[in-house]
Amino acid sequence: MKVRIRFTKTGSMQYIGHLDLMRYFQKLFRRCGFDVSYSQGFNPHQIMSFASPLGLGVTTVADYLNVSLESYKVTSLAGDDYIGRTLDVKEWIERINLFSNEMVTVTGIYRQPDNAKPSMSLLSAASYVIYGMEPEQAALVEEFFNSENEIKYEKQTKKSVKELDLKQGIYAVAAGYEKYCALAESIAVRDNDYEKKMAYSADALYVLCKSGSDVNIRPDMFLESYSMKTGSDCEYNRYKYDIVRTDMFYGDEKLISMSM
Image (tube, rainbow, N blue to C red):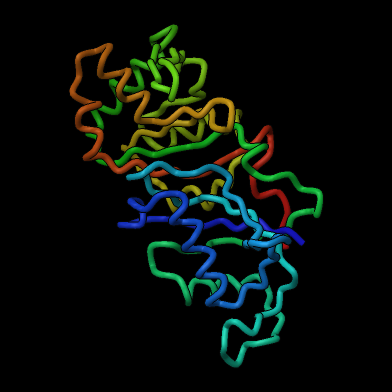
């Protein structure tokens, strides 16, 4: 059976890499007794995959992890009175968080059909909020995005420099949550209540952009292009901003598509 786990990653955990985060969850599931399926062969490993690796220095309030399970029972690895018990979703969320630290928190577990594809192959967009920018600066960035026909960005790859038009890869830029909602409502099916609870700000800058294996646009790329085009120091000060990924989407459907 397959489940999709929604989790947050905040605080100093933003500075650990993707592979370290994967190892963290592997150890966390062993500690709490989550009955994760293992691959076959000489070197078996837990069957799990992330929707999209998060860059260093970026926090998230809604990332997703796909996990294959043998059952909803607590396995013997946990070593406590819960061994062998079948837990419901709420109990599993509480138990996993009990064994985790306060910077990595599970906020949802959702049952997926057995033929469900990995989130990474379906991912098409991600939303971000940028805290710490003055309201006047955020308004200027929004105005810049709306007024430009194209926004060029040179991305360094392993073999060459690739030129991207960020205008084609960003769906919405808005100063303030209410304005962002008005733009994003027609673009993606969103968990509005969760998003407002976890990422509401009247003044912050919100960005909704393409994300996936083919094209992956990040807010810092946009800030750098804005800085180069306008002469603003916005890009050079981006490390004082708190960039938070607020959710991820595929097609016309939320990543959370079924409940357990």
